[in-house]
Image (cartoon, rainbow, N blue to C red; front, side, top):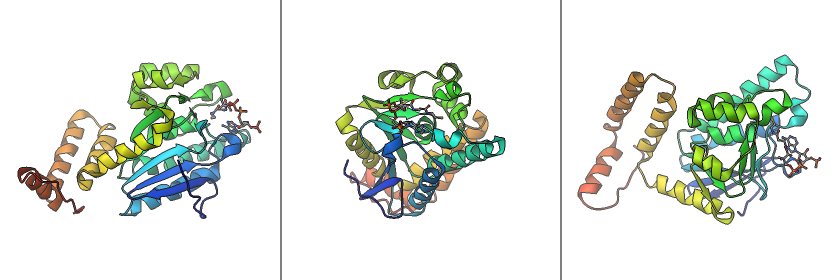
Length: 266
Ligand code: COA
């Protein structure tokens, strides 16, 4: 991956490739551990991505070839008091929510260690691709703490309570192939093709109606936190709203006319 440092960020490398934005966490001395300053930068980047109509999809990865994100920065965790611990947990959750609720696809390209907060960041992304050398885990209990950036909530929703409890309670490492079997990652790809595969997936999504893509993200994000009947009503409501869009009529008409659709995001 070629990266360009954006001067506004100390700990992130951000590169625009057309409508796809690549964000690499860059703290090489600590294998890309997330300190508070880096979390704040991720939030800024996520909000800028969500607000910019030119940016259609975000790929999050780690700089270097060894680590996605090694976790929360243990140097900062070591000095927390109860108030500070709850605060940083809420802050981390808010930052990861900014990715989860960006309204556009966010893909984690997991290129090595994804522990603790790194695994939780990947869980907040909509889709996870893993390189063959990826290793994931939530080792917090081995440090006497618990996952605090959404891990106890998002992991069971993704892989089921049984697998989640085993992974969180043991703190064990889950290699890429097992992560794929469990559904913890969508797919394992060769190391040197990770970013290209993520980009290919992002571009495939971007060929679809952007309002429809946003509606799917909302239906799945909000729907999984609802009873089924409420989720089904949410789905119908969004289906109805889309019928008011020019894009829906364009998409259906283009199919009937056997031509590619020209979506306008309206
Ligand atoms: N926070 C702060 N520093 C970290 C870190 C973290 N989460 N993870 C790694 N580092 C630092 C190490 O302390 C080391 O610093 P040093 O060079 O000053 O000694 C440097 O990054 C390189 O790590 P090292 O342990 O030497 O690399 P490794 O390849 O042998 O092992 C890991 C890599 C990721 C397996 C190991 O660093 C690790 O277990 N890290 C903690 C993972 C964790 O528990 N995360 C959850 C936190 S809640």
